[in-house]
Image (cartoon, rainbow, N blue to C red; front, top):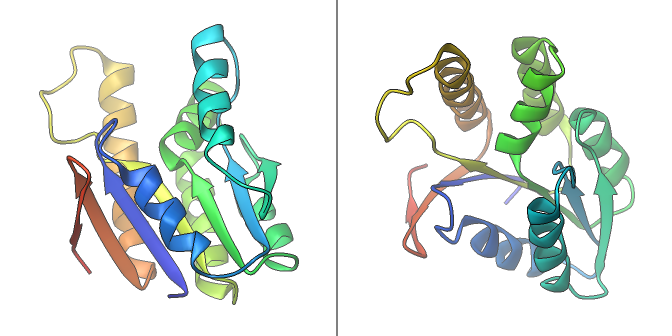
Length: 168
């Protein structure tokens, strides 16, 4: 595997699936974290994810500069796990950044890196239509980003209830 996109809903098992996939690829592993601990609940989530990783992992914090972080990690790691694109997109949107250009840059980096990379993203478009413009914009942007990445990665897995389903 050179590139993998793992999609699923909240608490579907997508991160666990992607992590176990990457752990089978070597002893020097890079975890690129996009979350920001802006409140105690998110800090707890981050700690829980950190406790799931052993000493093979090196963590890179990249709430905005994800393509650059992948490039940096690819020179040092046997494989890379990016968790998660949904939070990265939220960070970009809330900072009023150009999400389309950022998504294009991410796709280019994923295509050219020789290091295996697994990317985790929420599938947010399966529910009801959100009742406000920002939420609808986020849902649409997440869908477009997932589509762009699905075109360029080698493999796409959808996880529901802890069960992986191969889409590509």
